[in-house]
Image 1 (cartoon, helix red, strand yellow):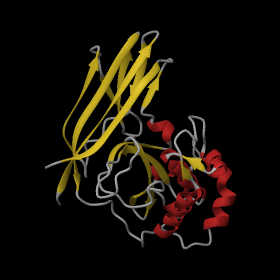
Image 2: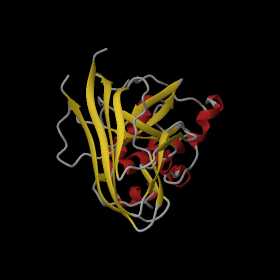
Image 3: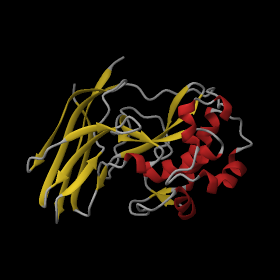
Image 4: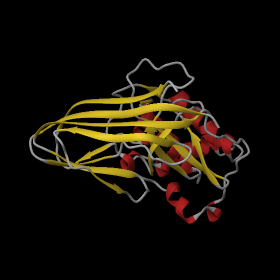
Length: 271
């Protein structure tokens, strides 16, 4: 399969009153179908960086932001397939008793995904549809039509119930709502966080940002769905997976440093 080159990365500028321990999840996973040709960190001032893997298998970085101003930059060159993610309209749902043990957790409520509170709506809207891939796509279609993308319309405390009521959100909110509807129907769904360049699609005029989508267990594997962009895409570069955004927060600070600026990069490079 042909591959294409995508430059990804980010920069964070902080001002801290005191030394502040921090965890970052912004490094893409070097695993098929994506491979990293090069990657690395630079910081000002020079900081000690230590990596670890969390309980979901995501790569995390630990640093201590010093008192004062600091800048952290990550840069990577990723090789991605010149193809959109797989799809199979005949992929079946499984009854709960047939789900793998490690998949069951993705049918349960979590911090932002609340299938118990959205269960009545999920069953009234989607239970009459034939189970399987096309029912999950119908859930994504509904979320795409129901929510309007708007920066600043939700915050760190906004749940799937909140955005379902307001009708506004950003990509993580679209994903949380679709996941909640899936879980309410006993369909395992998990949150995915990563880079998504504008490859073979009209360029988005908004500044580049991180992206969120979801994976749903159908048949014997996970399938990618994107309720925000509403189409299969090329160039998805995975950072992490979890129950919802709380499991793959890009930055967790054990304190209250001021985030002065954040820049995200995800763009194709010439071969």
